[in-house]
Image 1 (tube, rainbow, N blue to C red):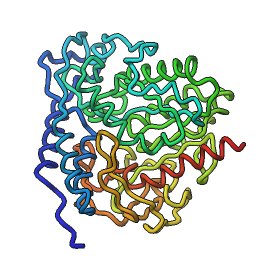
Image 2 (cartoon, rainbow, N blue to C red):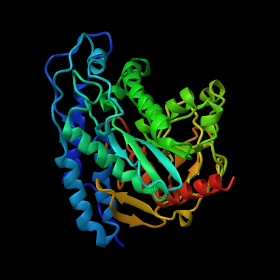
Image 3 (cartoon, rainbow, N blue to C red):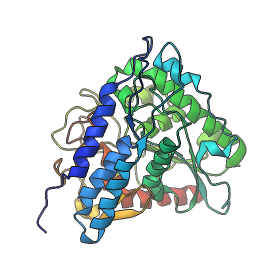
Length: 398
């Protein structure tokens, strides 16, 4: 089939909206927050992925109409302006909003307490859907439009995990994408607010809903960062670790320093080990630096096609299907054998050789083209879906 040029008017409009939202930024902690609110995009990482999935859908003629609708949906979901958060700094403004009470079902995007016949529970942490504003670096939970986008972002990945599991996903005051423009040390006050919510939600889930069931911990990007914080903070408890099927922390780094400081962190070594972390970060072969893996940093990873941790390449014939989903979770385009992959032994990145940045652009100004962050789970959707069930089955047979 003749390859078509993938950029569309819809993609460029979306990229413009994201650029405008990120350009505003928010005041670093310790400075005075500007008083004028800024318009934000609601869909952030996941909207850009939806917009780009429309491009991928051109590979499948049957999915063209659906993919176009997905892009329109992504563009139409814009956040309302954040108001009422006051304080001397943007970090204080975020903290000024009352922390969510997780005994209230309204503070859960998914709270599947029924279906107790299912084998395991998934505790899922949403990726970034919030752009950020001058005076609010953490997402407000009082905005219905934001929460709608939050659920949509979860739905895009939910099908990977929930075949035989109850699904739990809390709303939390995640950081805006503009925080990633700050130096790492300056991000931390905002990340601490986000993590405080995630920690509270997980502890409430454990105390009230888990009842000793196997746990799949999962998240993408910012959600993966939050998963790893939970692992570092709470999973030194042997009883809790014994319940862990696996932690799917896709789209964030795990370094040798992390592993040395937190001995409870154990990376997956194959396709069926349990109590382990599954992680990778996709990029083109010529990329040497990114927000997720800065130059000079090495992350641990496993290849989701051959489940090896060395540089053994996996041919694209091992790719069971790249899937591009919309905000309902429906697969709008599926491309078997889209790409192979191998792990770069220098960076620990997952190199993806059979796609191009022209067809799969970065989509966000915090990433350069060739960083396939937005597609981490989409490129390997069917392999991940299959692997979750493999690890659950292995866990239950122990």
